[in-house]
Image (cartoon, one colour):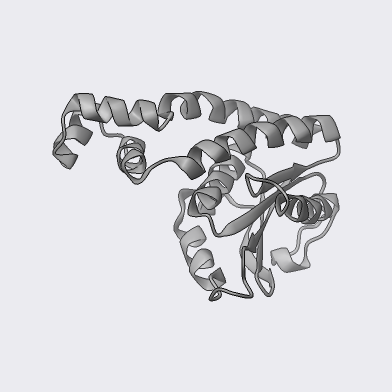
Length: 198
């Protein structure tokens, strides 16, 4: 199982963002596949339980993109039967997620992975940190085209929608490292999946 522990950055200096985060997480496509939905588990912290590594990667990178969160991905067993509320759940995956979110606070990527096999978890973290850097540093113009491509539009359609040339769309996608990110995401998911099977 995979546990995401999300901790708000600078929560003592900024307004509470948790309720807004929970509302947005509930509307994401991954929300229908969660083992247990995201809930506030402490003052400025949220946890959710997943069993799909692709969803963990997508959610972690979406949170890194926002820039307001530390993200810990915990891999491991969860005590069964799993209670209805994630707040009542426990097991090594939850302990690992807590360790990971604390480690995330001292990383540039603001993202960490902890699991039963340190080597596999470290590999997953290294790749996610690299993807996180790409996502975090992408320009507004880069996100504009990447988000439209994610909707299934062609580059020609994106160009028409934005009123720019197809060449400009291609240049923005190259600068955004869009192809590289798309090729690497499945590898990050694979590593998390391998860590979860150990």
